[in-house]
Image 1 (tube, rainbow, N blue to C red):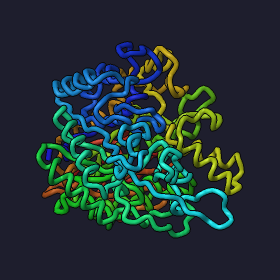
Image 2: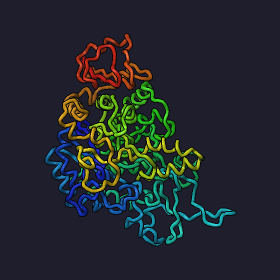
Image 3: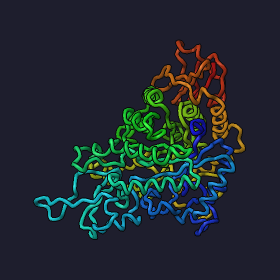
Image 4: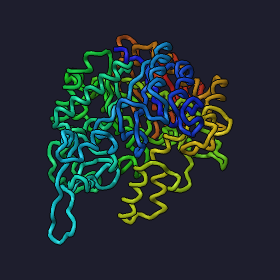
Length: 560
């Protein structure tokens, strides 16, 4: 399959590149003409697929993940003509595009929802409407059940025009669709066909394992998301995905990758193993939560052996993996697992091991089995943003989390420490193209702050530097694409402790050995495994020859 051997580059359009070619030139929002202007950079990196986060028409309550028209483009980003040009220009460069498919919910400004507010409308059952409960001692009608949402708030909103509540697992402006209604499901198939005919080569499917609600019974008491057992990875969900695959997707040369919620390995196999004919692959979150106590929000000590255990589980457990370390919902990986936050100075200049740790993490990602996904700015080692207060955050999830933690009497300083490190806005700051004003992203006021370290971390300076993070990414992408062993080889763990990990990739008569040091100190390889390091050294994060000791934040790839 072509999508197994290509590297996917995720673009978050509003933060990628602003241009002067849209309705509001240099308005501080990235746009489709801006993407077109940077296609040569993506080609030069070696990526063969773009995952495009939503560009559909939207009121932007959740940065485009609240869609008001699946068949039109948000004017902030351009026009449908711009989108068609993007498909054409990408095709000229041998780059395919997958669209972000958001079909658990729409915007409350979508025509379907507006019509559904009339109880007699044929669109009523496109969404999940229910009457409230009258509770003794309560003056007003209460929500139909006790579910809580993913943005740390209520999941039912009363609509005075309808006299009933509608379900929204996310923001109240994102009402959930009803997949028990076959007419609504057919509408989604039309959307799939429309974009595949336009030129899309597949879809990244948003929160795709929670789209089917088996029942609306009360959920078990929970401090996190309450009611999950009634809609996570339900049999009806599997049936809907099989229907999409059978009726639409298998008729095109395309692929799907699913974003999943609280998925375990058993669920993942049901959703993505090829004989099931549902998704081609999916994103899981375990590897980014090995140093977190509650989802990605509350930190605990990092241990390399825990990370290797998690990666081994998924590498050996699934037919095929989607390999990612960053996306628009995650903090920057060089700030999370790497050394970016240690030793940086007041004006943002990164610390001593920022660059080496960025390369080491890249070496880790590019030696795993599966389709690789890189997020914009990851290839130059972009870091978390230096937010000073929560008011600077745009992210609706971060503000909801702050309210929830406040309710549990968590001190303000601790709330901010956790949110600052985990906020989705860390990955949403504008791409740092050069050292000019606003990092070359826009000539206007950026919609979200530009990291002040752009003078030190930017694409233009790294393009000229043969030893930069950017050029390390280019070399690793090219080498991996030439290697069947790194793409398809079996994954075999060898050794790990709190600081280092060693594993192999094995394919036919070729073996690659990878060793990584996630620490600020030198790490000696145990004598038992010293013989593994007699092979041909292909790459190292430090650029030094590795014998029996790894330098701080070094990683090495060897072939035998």
